[in-house]
Length: 365
Ligand code: MRU
Image (cartoon, rainbow, N blue to C red; front, side, top):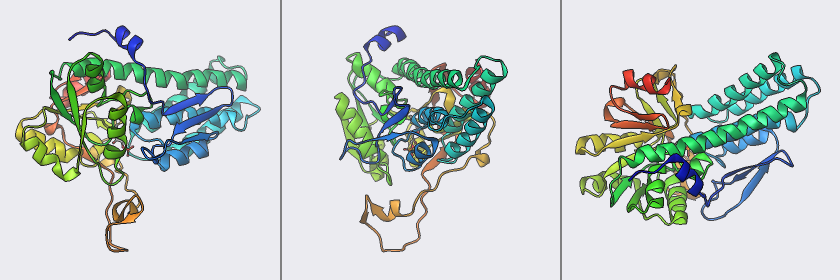
């Protein structure tokens, strides 16, 4: 089924709004994803320190959502304590970038967004486009909004490309939450084709692994899809192999936190296992991500895989499930080598192997 970007844009009306910029107060309201689905609470933040801490605590999470949040975090560097001169403004932005960048290490969208904002600010000052701090603030607000708007447009486009990989009646296995909560737009990356298919009346359902330890699958993906009325089945992470072996999965669609020029895909822990099993069983495995998630400079060994609090594994939401003090290893992302990836779906098109040649062709297009 064919659908245009314009038609989709006109008809996309998200029920979830995870990131809201309050222009009258210069604050950022985040739907607290650490409390979902049990509590729907919001936090209102006014400065880079508060925003960095919200990213660290995963009140907002998911690569594109972290990028958008950090972009607004840069704006608050100038609105929370307004500098007098443009020189001071650049100093404040440079400091805010450091504060925001150290919040989480793996998703490249974070540093992509803060670099973008800082470089733009420098350019506006150097080229005389911003003649006062107030003018600079207005330009940066416009740029942060553009990062959000471009992200939504990219997701709609990925939804259209991804639709080519979905047949009526398909069941998609995912991992983590790569939906609208993870991108801030209400649509998502991995879930974009599913949502677009559903909007067009194509029958599609999702299998969501719980995604221990933080439970993005059971708490967020399930909640998001149920909110949209899309059929979803929750499984334990350990059931991934069996559902694929039993023929219950037509394709795997996951998001990404960083994709390298040779096609290595960094994503939520558990993704690699899905990719290997899919490869073994001949099930297509797709990674979906906007161009802002690509890192063409780093090699696999340069990318830091975040390790989080051992108590996330020793407990489930505060309830102990292991002997106290047990040694724990808690990496929260993994890396899938290109040989297991069938294709990478971006807003600029679908990238097929050989990735070491084709990633650059599409990303730099
Ligand atoms: O630790 P999280 O919840 O931030 O991890 C999120 C993921 O791994 C997502 O799959 C990825 O960021 C893509 S989101 C569209």
